[in-house]
Length: 313
Image 1 (cartoon, rainbow, N blue to C red):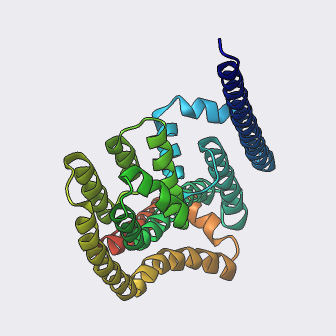
Image 2: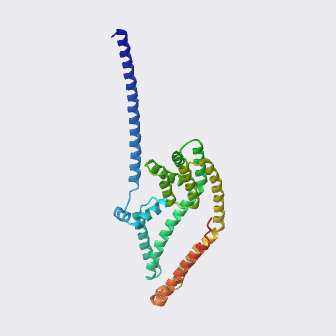
Image 3: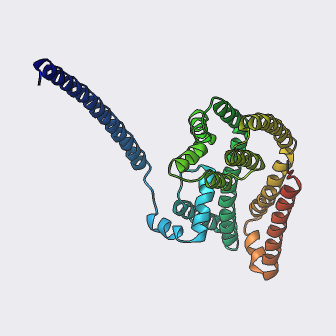
């Protein structure tokens, strides 16, 4: 072999070796940086978990095996509360026991079980109120969500990427819920399954329309940008309409809560005017029947007022 050719081959091999060494060092350094970032993220997660230690593990495990526990877990996920089904059930039973003892001490022994049932009803209503409040906040963010998705898809991004981008830009609860959808899509879930689970957590007509538009556009390959633009205008109009209706019905809503509060206050007033009156009244069966009937009528009145003031938009 000619010496000049041998020198050229040796130089080429040396240059190629240097290039590969530099590329290897760059890949190694990038891997170290990614590992350090992952360790930092995991340490932050462990700190968050340790800062919020879970209670009632045994009760939580038992509830996870039942249909009630799974439904309660889905309801808690929709409320955004940082509680497990076991914790909520334990707190609800504790509230019922406390109100039972308070009702016995403040009114009469007969009112203890009624106060306990009232505590369970109040906790369930609180859960529904938190869930409805989160749904309302999510609905108010839907026009902005549709606008972000329309801009992202118009820029050429895929729908999955647009959802992940919207999860980073939007505030809670829309950002959190879209983050869950993006995580499910990253793990291999289909768009239909991820969106169906989102509508199960936060059921509303507006979200159903948006999800249907996204799913059909993703499945059929339609003009998702124009559909989202039109949907944004519609959601803005529905948002203003819902706000006006809620303002008009605020007085009726307060009346529905004031009626049972007045009835409960009359019991304390009666017992305060004449001590022991409730004991003597509930000692006879006819008095117990009258009290239970009164509580039932107040509950029916509350339900009827709420039902008549409900307007489907």
